[in-house]
Picture: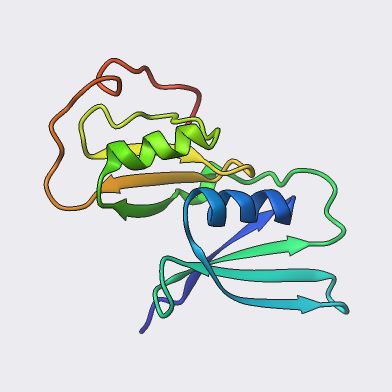
Length: 139
């Protein structure tokens, strides 16, 4: 058995791509459009050949999906969680569960998909401003 991808439905493909590509740093590895099925599939990964996230954009969907937390979350590791979360904040992304422990943070995509950010390797020493930053909303 081989893991292929995780699919999430998105309401606004441009907003989703801005978040996953421009803010998180994923690469578009493939795209398929179906005029007959009225959908676009966009595949994203941390690097070519790595497991993918499939964004499914149904052209006629007008209302937000009743999705979000029920499937769990996506998780990515980063070299320095503090630097990464600071960059996300500078891009306008809310850090819902700050990395107070130097190991884990949570954010959400524009479609309310929970995303866990984990520190690669050893936990970083807890420090400000993260140490005293409260949780926000759900994650």
